[in-house]
Amino acid sequence: MQLGVIGLGTMGANLARNAASHGIAVSVFNRTREKTDAFIASHGGEGKFTPSISLGEFCKSLKRTRVILLMVQAGSAVDAVCNELTEYLDDGDIIIDGGNSLYRDTERRITEMAEKGIAFIGMGVSGGEEGARKGPSMMPGGEMKAVCEVLPLLQSMAAQDGLGGACVTHIGSGGSGHFVKMVHNGIEYAVMQLIAEIYDVLRTIGGYTDQQLAETFTAWNTLPELQSFLVEITGEIFQAKDEKSGKALLEMIGDTGGQKGTGKWTVAAAMEYGVPVPSITAAVEARILSSSKTLRAEGKQFPHVIDIHDPLPRPMKLRSLSASALELGVLLAYHQGFSLIKAASDAEGWKLDLSEIARIWRGGCIVRSHALWMFQDMYTGKSSGGREAFLHRIRGERQLDLRRIVGIGVSRGLAFSGLYASLGYLDALHRDRLPQSLVLAQRDFFGAHGFPRTDKEGVFHGAW
Image (cartoon, rainbow, N blue to C red; front, top):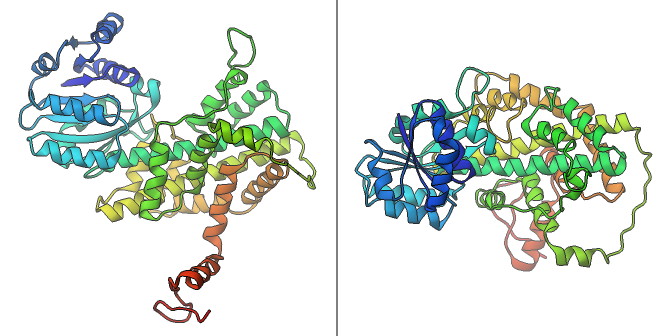
């Protein structure tokens, strides 16, 4: 097998190394020749690499049918490389965009490349630097024929799902691969925010030391209900020291959260398809607010009044409450993400297999966790075990624990956007009647927008 890789940044370089480690002959090209030379100098002995100094030379180094993986910055750079590549490619060659491109852009490129006889695959890749090197989760979308042609190559590079399969599948047609990766990133935003808020509880209210925090998250990662990549690395983060100051590295990190756009795209897509994703939205807004220096400076002048009524639980009880709150928050974030994927699939005619998506997220990717088995089983349509397990985790004492943690944090002035949004989502779904009836009445009062009635079909107006 052969593979061409364009773009030797962190992800591109490690995916190239990954492919080579499985016996695949890899041609590499980067617009900056120094980066190509540095890659070969560092990793040339790891496999069969062919470096090129021009796109023409790069394409000639690949036998037909050429398979070219683009790992360049999303946006205009993808269009520029594709346009240049078409001068050297032949009918039936395949371009895979492995970056975080907007799915609508991917759909446009599929059409544009098809007009030139070239198959275009939009593929989400998750796993970070280590995943790219050792096995990521990959989400290719596009024409089935093209995806099936490259699937054996991708399967050799992908992570294992723990069930005997590879963490890659044909997601669906059009831009579905990049859409699913986008929602994956939205879930990732939410889970990271939830973990950060639980950290705030334990540190600010519980007075936990770095050692205690490390021990807590390490212990949680051994529990089936909390085992996940993000919980695992959080335990390691609390153990890291800053080489210069000797302090905990986390203490030296600023609190202004950045983002690359996929979180905002997820929220925008949720609005387009009419699906509530409050935990994801809260996580995106938390990052935006953290970076709003002027707003935060102004906000420090606002009066801040708290009145603590409830007694503080003992440290280990607080830890137990926090574990339940985190577990439920994560499950509800997954639920929101899968609901959005289903709505988009129905609207776009993608016919996505949610069970398969849950399966390929069980290894390699950033949101991998033991809990995904519930969603994999839930969406097979053959078993109710996953759904029953999901409902069991939400009911009873765990839900009360989430309410207690939210109450403890809110009463002490913590910024609990993610946990509060998760609880609000759960409560809104459970209500038989929501207060939006008053909103409808208000809209009809001032704008004659009309409203539905509970006793008959149609749209009506009030005699206000």
